[in-house]
Image (tube, rainbow, N blue to C red):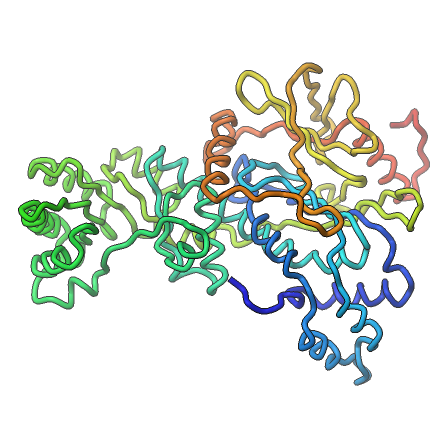
Length: 489
């Protein structure tokens, strides 16, 4: 997708902090950062992790080109002097990625406060990765989650992503197509995404094709002669049900030449009524296998409503509201420092305290353990790898300490964060995109239906391991100058 260096895909303050660490002799400090989000998007009950593949590509190619350094050398402070010393720019020019990176595999359902990514390595390197990681993970996770909601609303009927023309720029369009496929869509209209990622591409013609001919029937028959193996006729340019009848007539001529009408598309009007009537016409004419494709600013709520109304749509084309995450423009993921140590020294855990409980960070070197029971996900535990897990396992809600859950000691479990880079070396084999999509489907199936519902979903149990919660509480009290003891916790 990108042919040039992306080292400057960052916020300036990442580089000014890296410069400060270098100048003060703190560049060799080792740090741990975690990327988390605090609330599910779309007021939902789950989130689908995505974006790791592009992150891997970004990190594998991460370096500063001479023209990157020339640009940085041109930046000045408020006194008109250079912002960065030449020695620091030489330091950047010798950059080699040297961090460990652990991440949740794409297609995994995740929950608030769980780390999606853990980065361990030189403080200055961890710092300059922040913006790019958030840019990739936040957006693709948001779109994959939206796609999962749309596909669940469609009740296993195929969903096509049609959002490129309304997406947020070139990269936004391609990234949205990739993430939508991870979330469950079966194809896209985006040909570039098809080429780059192997996503099936779908599409036939628009209203302009119909309008460029003398009448609607002529346009359908002309298209059928041109592409007899790709005939889904858009029938609502003039009168929708008359358009269906003309599509049937063109379909009969297709059959005479050994081809079949693939379907019709409805892009306006009362989709419930029109699809029911169109289905009757198609079936009566012997085109029971012809699909009815529905589009027109659809999202999961409209699809759910159409399902309730017994709409006869069998394929769903979802564009703007999917590719732009229409009702929530950002995920809101954050990237927080949680531990620091000097070379050869001991880890010192760090915490950010806030007046808002939800914004208080969790200290430590964190991992997520998912427990299973009766064929479903039972609960998730965020724990510190040095503290380990207590017995019996108990989780505490990160925001409401009165909400606790004891987990059966014999419950099967898996740790979600897997090693992706080790000291800068890639050690993870990324699955093919269809495998990631299937993982999403499997993960969603393992959630209780009440967690998957669109309105007022049940809250999945995900929280801090009891010992980690107690350590965090002590650190909050200490940061606020409140004396405590082991007995207080």
